[in-house]
Image (cartoon, rainbow, N blue to C red; front, side):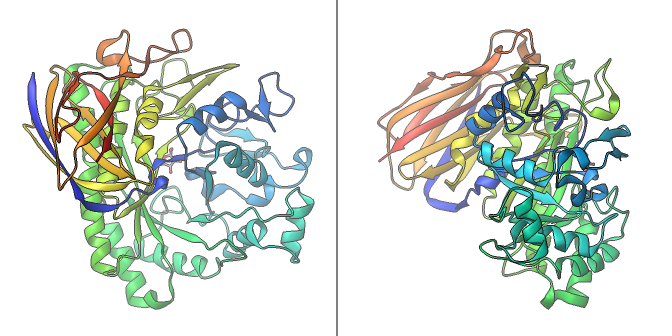
Length: 499
Ligand code: AHR
């Protein structure tokens, strides 16, 4: 068994963990929307206003805070007016990015906002900069948010919502260095300025405008985009968030991998920390008042297409290795709570690193879902300085931290999440609470799988193999020094009442 030491500094808050860090992303892609959440009002599958009840309950349970929609690449080919008004007269469009399938536009603005209301999440709309127009995007904002009296607000009322939809988060394009128009950073800077200038606050909904950030940790994109904005238009341009995308990819396949491939994928996932550190440093250099938040609005694993499935639909299985990726990444975001204001894992249902898989009337929650469940108590907590001492795992490519940790305090409850990246050895962790405070009572919860070892997963015929269970390998309640034992590949949470 390896050893680690963790100091949690109770009187050194880093920043509040934005609930939006626990955000999601849903695109018109494969079976994410259609057959994922949407089955239609007349479906025999139990639904509310066309959305599956089981999916709604599952996402409510993990406190899904914000959901980005309608893409992805799809967003820059989406025209919002196609998705409002009577469903039977909505145009059928070809989804050119994802398999040339026909999109019926049955799920449009009102439906998606309704889904978010049912789930308890806020909608985040990605606007079309690639193939749309400034007018189209500003009209969408007016349609959603203007209280009443304008033609667009009246149209919204005719379409079922006299009340504004109150959409706060707006992405000004998606991946505009790629599928969103192949812009240079300078050209996107000019476009961002033009578009964002017409996106206005209406009624009770101040907008939060999100600029397209880099592909991965592309320093050049961020520097050149911000240089352009600062040089030509700094004073008149509003950017509330800059959104990077980082997919850590794969090693092996989604459910077949060796121990070496386990480490290789986690090593790739752990690069998120360098991305956050380097991008935030660059942002702060341009924006010393630190008004611009860092967002990662697409991230996760991306495994090879599963045999027998349409490769364009990006359906993949999800094991406890994906749950480790989620745990490592969420711990990074929690520790950088003073800068990271939102993150959206890709994608919620049936696509990439999904929370949920559906097949006809069946639904399973994935190991990644259970990691989100485990971590959800961090939302709104004060992230605390957490110092880890643990020998790293040596890999041919570099070093991987064996132990990933973050901690947060809400009232008198301290939440600590831990992940042991080592798939061959368990870990004893000595945890000290410093800065004044002892643990009164302690509850532990951990991810558990009944079989499958490091490849454990849930599937339709065996939906409950991986889930959460009580973690009781904890000693030291009533003191400020605890000792816990984390299984190999273990992910766990401590909920500590501190006094
Ligand atoms: O999530 C799948 C795709 O990955 C998104 O549509 C795009 O933004 C990214 O390249």
